[in-house]
Amino acid sequence: MKKVIPYSLKSLVIYFLKLGTWGFGGPVALVSYMHRDLVENKKWISEDEYKEGLTLAQLAPGPLAAQLGIYIGFVHYRLLGATLAGLAFVIPSFLMVVTLGYFYKLYSGLVWMQAIFYGVSAAVIGIIALSAYKLTIKSIGKLNLVSFKSNWILWVFYLSGLIFTVITKREDVFLFIICGLIYMLLKAPPGWIKKPIIAPSILLVFFTTSVNENETLLKIALFFTKAGTFVFGSGLAIVPFLHAGVVQEYRWLTESEFLDAVAVAMITPGPVVITVGFIGYLVAGFYGATVAAIATFLPCYLFTVLLAPFFHKIAKNKSIKAFVDGITAAVIGALVGAVIIIASRSIMDFSTAIIAILALLTLIYIKKIQEPQIILLAALIGLIIKFYE
Image 1 (tube, rainbow, N blue to C red):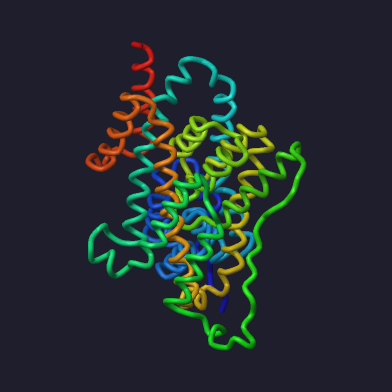
Image 2 (tube, rainbow, N blue to C red; image 1 turned 135 degrees about the vertical axis):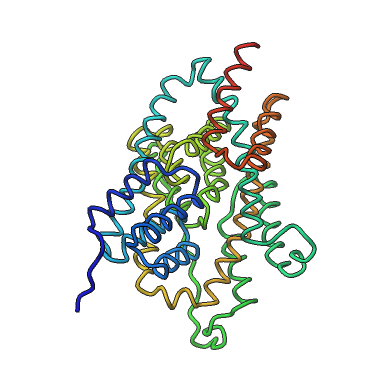
């Protein structure tokens, strides 16, 4: 007997359009909304199906909330459902950041716009500093002796990512992969390791190319594809990748413009990773935004739809989990390193230091206030400070 699906594909698409339009709060909040709405209230998805999607989203690279949305679309409507759910979730916030990018380019030379982002950029430092701390606690362990002893290998990877990023002022994918492989070999070596004669060689393919300087869109596509392929968990984990590429390597954006891009992602709903659309727009207009968004989300989409049918085997594979844990430790360390670099260049005076500290303390002690509200308040403070200078 054919199983009756309790909702239509149209209803699912409308739900994700609404979530992408009104869903504030970052990846943790967004995945919580999906559970509340689709599992508890509507009962479209079972608890087990939700947990399977969440586990897969945590194991595979890509932004957590977007991957879970794609997986939920896949559950009953397979490839078409995954495609439409993913597009519906991302498109609203993409259009918002492109619109903001248009006005940012139009008015960024004006005093009032500079004043707004004077406060906003400082607040972002405080916000991403707290996010980096939370990711550290969640993925590696608490900052205490017990955690240092029990997870010392992950802490070594974490510090390696942090120190390497601070010293070189860039991220290194090879470092992340090496950390993942070492942890996998130490904690859960795969079966083929014990059979060296027939063991396949590990091939690491990276997106490298020699392109003409005028082929900006191709550079954007290659860079953001690599970024989307090596980001695990929170959307903010992409920050060190983006900072190293768009500020350090290609010099597409200045330090302050990069912080403004992160801020724009935080004041818009949907996945935080959508900041890539804003960055792409500043670099090459609407086509740049489109290419950056597609390149970033395509790996996430492909990982989800390709791995979903084999979920049970993947989830139980200890070697894969250990590999991901090793990479994640180094990536989060790199995120902390990126926060240090950005803060050292963006905290320009006493006022910006105070705004950053206040943003951090507000998030810690006033639970009802969320990131978008803090950013809007920081914008107001920036206007006031510049007005009275």
